[in-house]
Length: 278
Image 1: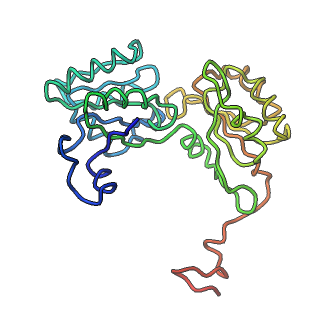
Image 2 (image 1 turned 135 degrees about the horizontal axis):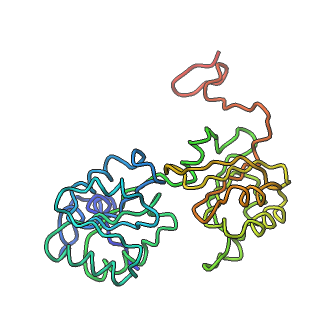
């Protein structure tokens, strides 16, 4: 699939500021907007503006709170895409685009992560419709912020993995959770609350001890947000006790061993380009 590019991306790719011959010039008419995890104040300024300017706001009502799309201007069409299939959402977008209107296609979290934007962009490419993407705050990062958690730990864990369990959608063999767990770095595990025992089994198979800390964040950023601090060994009980369901992200934190480990960035003896060492 050849990606449809915004004007800025085309300029960078082509080394000039002109769109290729035969393609429309100007701003995208369709924007995929990351709504963030649920808190209306965690959407980007640009995303908020695009929703307010759009003629059509198409949003996933099962995952995006109404307060986000209530920022649409008076007279704008606001459509919940939850009951629609791909062809129906595309037809809705094209009706607005064909009449000269602008579309804000609003996705939960960040559109690039489990957002099903590939197939939507494929259809827009076929129609020659210009589109752009506005990033959003994903639930894993919102959960880290809500719990004041540092996902990287000096000398222990300098990587962060975003992954999921296999369910109705398969996961490549090389990306099985047990394989990811062997890295012993922080992980955000999405779309896996329906099978907590399978999740625990995979983490254990990857060598993680039962004492490894886990943060379970349910609908983080929503009024009904629930944050549970548990461990690999206690995860199943926590899911059952607190009724955590599919809108839960798990932060698995092997690097959090209770030790005091700090970055050298502000160490007085550590010189860098803006400071001489003591």
